[in-house]
Length: 159
Image 1 (cartoon, one colour):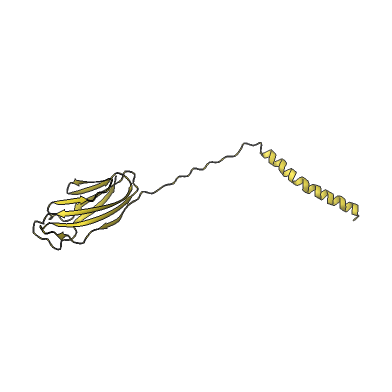
Image 2 (spheres, one colour):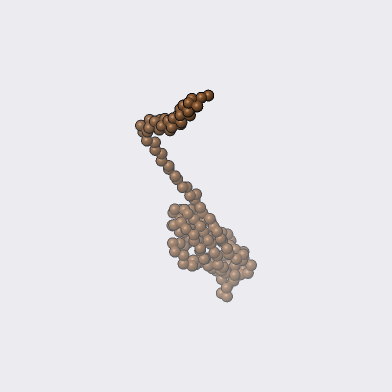
C-alpha cells in the first residue's frame, strides 16, 4: 500500500473517532426533550410492641415479724413501649392469709390501687420502671408464721 493511501486511511479513522462522541451527544440531546424523570422513596419504620418483665425477684418464703405479721419485699422491673402504658395485677395464690398491704417506693408515673382481691399498679406511659414493693400480711388464721411459700401471683397487661 502506498504511503498516501495509508495517510488517508489513518485520517479517516481519526475523523471517525472524533465524530463518535458527537453522535452520542446528539442522541443524548434528543433524549433530553423527554419529560424529566423523578422518583420518591417512602420509608416506614415499624417498631414492634414490647412488654417485658425484666425482673420479678422476691424471697421464696415470707418472713415473720415480731408482731406475728408476715412480709417480704418484691422487685419488679418492667419495660414497655406501649403507647398507653401497662398495669400489673397482684393477686393472692393462697387464700388463707389475712389482710394484705402493699407499699410502693416512689416511682414517678406509677399508681397503686386496691383491686378486688389484690392490687393494681399502673403506668400510663411507655418506659422502663423499677417497682420496689413491700408486702405485709396479717398473721394467717391457723397461726402459722414459718415456712409459708411466696403467695403473690403477678400478671401484666397493656392498656
